[in-house]
Structures are given as C-alpha cells and as structure tokens.
Image 1 (cartoon, rainbow, N blue to C red):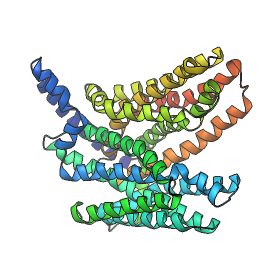
Image 2 (cartoon, helix red, strand yellow; image 1 turned 120 degrees about the vertical axis):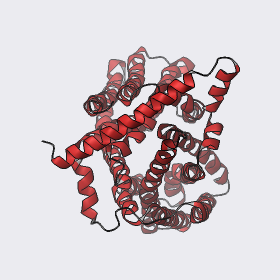
Image 3 (cartoon, rainbow, N blue to C red; image 1 turned 135 degrees about the vertical axis):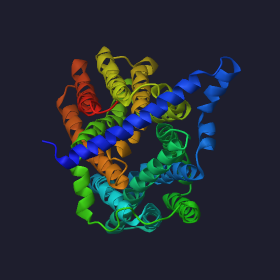
Image 4 (tube, rainbow, N blue to C red; image 1 turned 60 degrees about the vertical axis):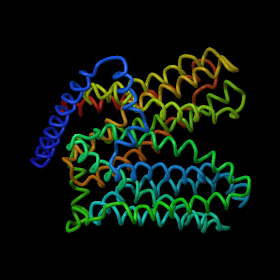
Length: 454
C-alpha cells in the first residue's frame, strides 16, 4: 500500500508531467500553423542534428559532446581488451571473463552510488573525479602486465563511468528542463540529441581504436586517456559548479527516497527490459549472423547500420513521437522492439543463408534501433518527472543499476535457453521468442506506470 510520501511524490510528478505536456501541445499547435513548401522544408531542417545542436545551450552542448567523447574513448579500447588479455598477456578465457565481469559490475552495479555522490557533492566535482579516474584506468591498462594490475585498471575504468554517467544525465535533465521552461527545445529533444551523440562515439570509437591498434594496444589506451584529459579541462572551465542540493543529508535518505517511489521502481524494472533486448546485439545477433553467413566477418556492418540509422533518423523519430503522450509512445517503442525478435524467430526455421539469410538479422537491427529511438528519449524525460525533479543523480543511477542487474539476469536466462534449445528447425527460434518476452513484460509494467501519466 502506498505511503503518504509515495502519494505526494506521485501527485507532484503528475502535475509536472501534465503541465509540461500542455506546454508541448501548445507548441505543436503553433508549429502546425507553418505553411507548406519552403516552410515545411525549413521545419524538417529544424529537427536536424546540427540545427538541434546549435539551438542547445552552451552547457547542453558541452554535456552531450562529453557523452560523445566518453563513448569514443571507451570504445577505442574495450572492444579489443579481451584480445589484448589473451594474445599479449596470455590470460586464459576464464580469467578474461572474470576481468570483463569485474568491469561490468564496477560500472553498472555502482551507478546508484555515483548518482548519490552527485546529489550530495554537486555534479561538477563528481564528473571531474570520474574523468580523472578513467584517465588513471586507461594509463593502467596501457602498462599493466599482471592479472592484478589489469583487474585494478579495469575496475577504475568501470567505476569512473559509475561516477560521471549519472551525473551527466542528471545535469542534462536539469539544464534541459530549464531551457524548456524558457521556451527552448524540449527535454525529450535534448535526450534525443544525447542518443545521437552516444551513437557517433560508439561508431567512431572502434574504428579509431582499430587504426591505433596497428601500432599497439598501449597507444590506443594512451590516446583514450588523452581524450579524457581534454574532457577534464573543458569541464573545469565551462561546466557550471555549485554545491549538491542534498549535501546535508545522509546517504540512506537518498536511497530511501528512490526505493519508496514505487511507481519509479516499477518504471526502472520495465525499462531494464529494453536494455536486455539491446544487449542481444552481442549475444543472439552474432549467432544468427554466423548461422546465415557461416562466420561473423560481416557482423561489424550490422553495428554500423544501426549507428548510421540512429544518427540520421533519431531527431525525426523524436519529432513524430512528440505528437503523442508518453503513455502511447513508450509501449509502442517496446512493441517495435518485441517485433524485431519475432522477425528472426519466424525466419530462422526457414534455413535461409547467404545474403538473403542476413536480411532478417538486418531487419532485427533496424527495428531494435527504431524501438529504442521511439522510447528512450521519452523514458529519460520521465525520470525527473517521476522523481518530482529531486535527487536526479540517485534516480538515474538507480535506473542504470537496475538495468545492469536486468542484463545479467536476462543474459543468464537467454544463454541457458540457447544451450538447451535445438540449433535447427523451430528450436532455433526459442531463444528469440524468450528474448521477445522481455520487452513484452516491460509493456505490462509500463501500462501500470502509464496509468499515472497524461
């Protein structure tokens, strides 16, 4: 049964959502009055990535470009870490798995801690500290020659993200909310811009890393560290400072506030389903590509297609989605994600191979990306509203940690199904059907949450 604190939080969140939704409806009606022809083309341009970046405030530009550089530096190194550990350092596969697992836990599992630190001490010092730790982590990876040194450096790389990621997300939410109230781009548009920057970094990071690896792994790590040194300098100069809004409160006060917000906890659990679905790019997709093509040599093209699709289409998709309430947009996004798995589940038993056999995998990648483009900006926008604009670091950190736990549980379940199911006929469809069940379950949770949305 909901407590009085729950009800006050829910009512405050609902009034925030309704007021913001009314403002957006008025803004859409004004935009609909634009004449056709050249004005229509201008309106399309207005939603382009470059123009949205120019409309953003200097702080928003700094933050979203920061996220781009985070991903650029991260993906320059991490995709090639396992090869370095086995080939250069001679570690066994089991030890490599342990190292990668430690990194995942030190990042995803500690997001909640990083968010709480941002609420207590302010966003700027937490972001700067996180970037500094990541510099040390990459330098450590460059020179580590033992298992203990590699593990310590990997923990530093992961914990750094647990510090700066929730801090940056909460800063974007706060700054974008101020801009929207002043008549600027909506917070949903800003989070769409963030998604584009994430994809740009994720796309170019591995490419740059592969070029640097022509020299050696150490050079890639040192260049990644240098990128974060530049980020530190930029944030030290341009990121607004200020004390944390909850610096005088205990650690447990923030955690209790989040956990007692039962609607948000359910929302975080529902959103973890999309993260489980997204991670099938690294589990189910490689298996399907190998089945259809005979090897994974073309796998990189699917990631490139996904990244280009998001970069070119995210702002337009967000524009269309903004015409509807979050209670409509979020389930629709999850339905598209579920359908992406069904496409492969239906086609796999047909035994297609070669280029034709890769078509279902391509459709899967595009639909999965489309579903996330529809849902994620709206979902990120709802976090501060469900939180009544309080403790945003803790709320974003909690949602990320829940997502990390969901990915761990989901990967274990789907992996077990892959091992148990037959590899031919309809048996090969079973893992894809199980994966589709996660976004479907997320829809059920979202329907409960959306009952409180306009």
